[in-house]
Length: 243
Image 1 (cartoon, rainbow, N blue to C red):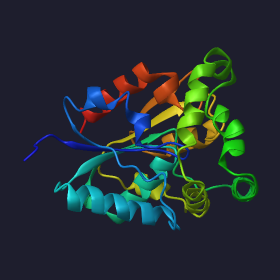
Image 2 (cartoon, helix red, strand yellow; image 1 turned 30 degrees about the vertical axis):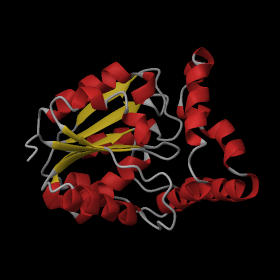
Image 3 (cartoon, one colour; image 1 turned 90 degrees about the vertical axis):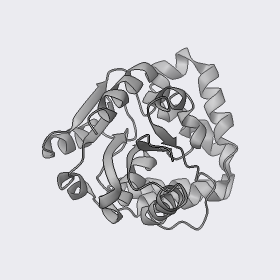
């Protein structure tokens, strides 16, 4: 039996499990890395639906009894839903450019517009703006080849998977209390120029928690694993040693 501590790396919207390819070779030297892929799932109505899938995959199928969750963006929402449903198996939780807060009313309207656009115009046109917005403007200008690769990778995702995920994100509740009550380590990776997760929101969450570990990245948007991989990997390694 594999005795390494288990970590579950959860990808965000517009990504699949390959977003973690730069981290897994390093982390798996010390930990059992489980990297689910749910990008093409349709018929999911809530983050709880995704969390239930993760539980069945990780705990039931992989025959482990505990894990640390690291969730990028939507992956963080799934991690929080998982921690709410199955707190006894969580050894740690990192919100990687993510938030415990629900969508604002303005954000909910934007989500609906995204769904309507996807239904009317398809995925490729949607990705023209969606992918660059995951990065800082400076990064987009400096590394057009990376942006192009991210866009091409996202084109492999079924549009139904996109729409299902957006609806589920729109409906998620406030789960800050899950972190306030946590008996395990909590971490945040924050991009100062993140266009999707307001800096003031995550700052307020950090201040509301007792002792979170926090990495704040200057000149980074919503994709630290691409924009600042060395810093993010070093933080995760330090965080995982606290478990």
